[in-house]
Image 1 (cartoon, helix red, strand yellow):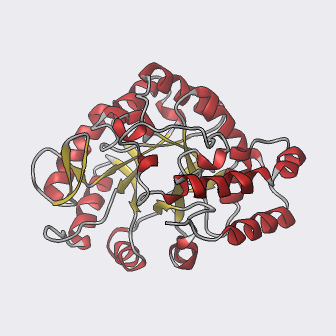
Image 2 (spheres, rainbow, N blue to C red; image 1 turned 90 degrees about the vertical axis):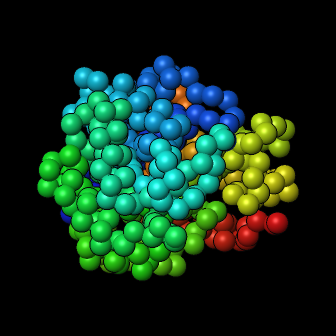
Length: 334
């Protein structure tokens, strides 16, 4: 496994991280996860050198954090534990964000809700500190807490020893710049994959310029880029994969194009003795500005497969070929 620093935090984290979103369950994921298997997957990750584990309170309304906390009992010192604040459901403080499983969620980066969230996360994770504490989404009107106020609250938590480092997620370049001015952040987490390369225009170069770690999510496009989601796959009502606005690549015509693209890399998977998932993760990790790739896993087999990508180095000519292929693929049809 390769490791990279989390910015200037002094923390070294595995290039491939374990994203624990799916471990929170919910109708958006279709089949509900087995908590015991989730714990086995986390143990497998640690044994394979993955020390970066990323979760959030909103993943299953605390379920993901609780499962991660259970898995890390007796193993906490082996993990770089990352979680988040800013998605709130206890009351109507904040600005309405969305509804999950019939419950409204609000964006709230108010100091008063953050003070509650950190204690809830520490309890669920069964730990006395969080290594990387991230704002999940930026605050928006009508309850748009100034970034300076949010960062002051997070800096206070760092001074109290409850968190070691501060990160942000899903921010614009301007919000990233302002967060840097007020909080000494070390990382930025955002969606990025070979099929969603918009961050290459601004966020990735800016993070590289500022010396920030980058944590990319959906880099396997919810399993589509593993090649295992065939044309015969039927999704449950309410799953993310049925929402064309969220991910149009799952529409049948677009999915066929992606599967054909992946089939064209058979010589590469043979050359590197790897799976498509490993090839895609390794390509993503090799892109300028990318330091860490978060990959989800429902079970230990998926985690084991993803972990090997952290050892894989692709030759420059192959990196360039893959980029040419994905650029030629173009945009998804509506």
